[in-house]
Length: 308
Image (cartoon, rainbow, N blue to C red; front, side, top):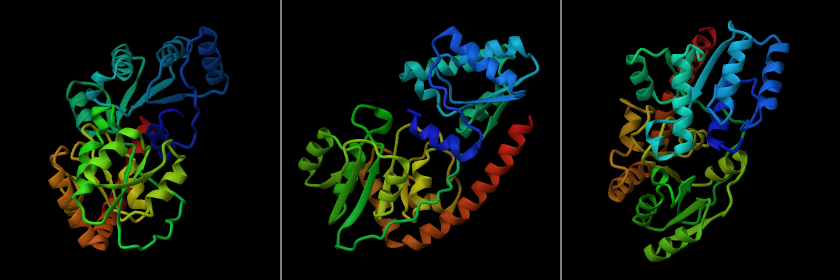
């Protein structure tokens, strides 16, 4: 539950989910394994990988060799900068080589293609978003409201500064940011950019509702797999500008409006913002076409994955 994006992605795809958290004690590993065996479960899927999951996999295969064990990885090779995530990735690969993990799934298409070519039993699963949250009514005050969420000042992958700089290039803009920190406030002050926000992360429903009050949202990161936030924004009928490091929108007309090719260029981000704001309904209509195809693909992928 502490990995919010992964939790959201997992619950969109799977109906039977259990939050185990990290597992450090041998008795807890045995408790989980016993519960799986006693309930006659024949297939276990690990969505992402935490400390202790390796021990669960190994014990399960010892107790019940016929059980199918699959993983769903939400990371990428850029996580070599994140020791925790990279070590878990190597654990999955090693377990697969030992025939203890039967199928390795990934939401990053290019990563999945690489492992398939390496001979791994690798499967691509696209993320999707369905929500019952209704868009909030937008207030018209002459301002261009731009949302920036899940951006950071201490993680190069989620760099907030270029996106803030782009927002400052838009006339009459107000940037809404969650989480908002003193570093962002200081930079906004230097840029002369009006900024609002909340200092603490918000529950998913609240954040989605907040997104819906903007004219446009930004999620332009330097490394990505299959981000949930752009899909959530569009579900709220708000276009979202994103980077070119995931499979969404590739080779579509929508790509011309919302995909930035140089994530470090404020001018290009500004141009995408203005292009979307000039034809918002056309952008939303193009997204509907993508969304239908993406959900159909997800349904087929999940069926095949579960049956493997």
